Length: 350
Image (tube, rainbow, N blue to C red):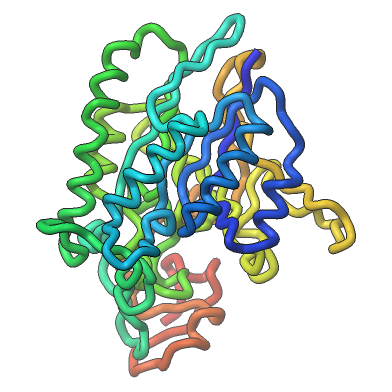
């Protein structure tokens, strides 16, 4: 039988994360999706690929933004992308469509390439608060990535370019669609804005300008997989929109598990309440598909933020409100308001 697990954003430049990868128990016969952001250093990507290949029978991967940070003066991020893909092929890491077959059930797994663009953000900006920096100012991508002409990081040309790389994948999926039971796609970036908390809930409200791709969103809609795995935002997620289930299980940085473990936790990717720093790290990649138990895991995994949106509607028009944890970072202007997260949904007292 076959099982498929998923993880994203393993960031092995964090030494605790590299130790986590090394300590993963071998899972003979199991398969793993790695939805981007292994490292910006090619030698670390190679070492991680080698480790994971020894632990899983099949490892499927797509690059994330950190992976495309350039480390050589004349190297472009497209050249870095091509180097990583060749490296993956040499080691046996899968970067194309893969069909998994159990005794009574099968699935196809397809990586989708993507990049973020500011026009992905379709919701209004935060108002009545001063000192909020732009995503361009904060995000390292704008300093460490180099793009060949005519690609530019101040428009959607990179996102469009990356999405065109998915055309062969779409065509292959059409050819085999009816030959498999279940269909799973994965990307690093977000294909829908609903897959991240609204601006007022974020430490950096402008982050949404650098998390997703509308091009990717349209591609996922055309493909209509049963499940789409994504990463990048480091916020655990499991929610269904327009018949497609979207899941994020990000390892993220070790510091995030200290600062906000609840918003990182999903399924087996969590730190038990009884855990202490002397115990072995119990976090594990998330089970997505099991051929012996009906295919795709049917139960929705509880998570902090997707559970929130099952209870409350998305109201991005509330641009003057911040919760205490981010209000303390910025300067209030007349008309601003501070409310706890659960009080952000109207009606609330003015």
